[in-house]
Length: 194
Figure: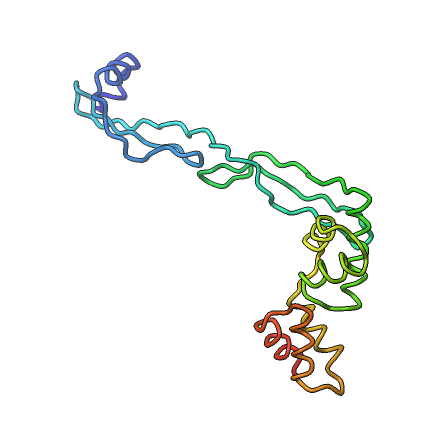
């Protein structure tokens, strides 16, 4: 008969008389560990479960950024604290931003201008919003950097809307003037099929 099954008293003695044992599997925040020891009295191997560890919370991280819409309203984003070991979300919260009236107006105007001009980020900030519309640099930069606009796609839109009756060289020079990089220009021509 197995000496570990005989009596509760004998089982307790084996547990007391075991060696320190070796950790076979470390406990993590997702799985329990295992430690194996040997009973000094009977030589039987004993496996003991090591409880799971607590999650290790990290810092708040943006999971989904807030979005500023064309009308100057804000769609909130989401932040979360994740475990630094297993990346499990431990806590989430909504986060948003309060816009000043000037920021709101700059964003509304930035969307309107970009729909008409299809220019680069820097040209939209410095030449249009600051130069033509008289917004300050901080509000203009904030507005453009928070728009839901892909400037590579704006380069394609520029080629499509301005290439009729013009040479590739003429369109290229205008795109350079509007602040596009050579890479953006070449990609735009390729995507537009020019």
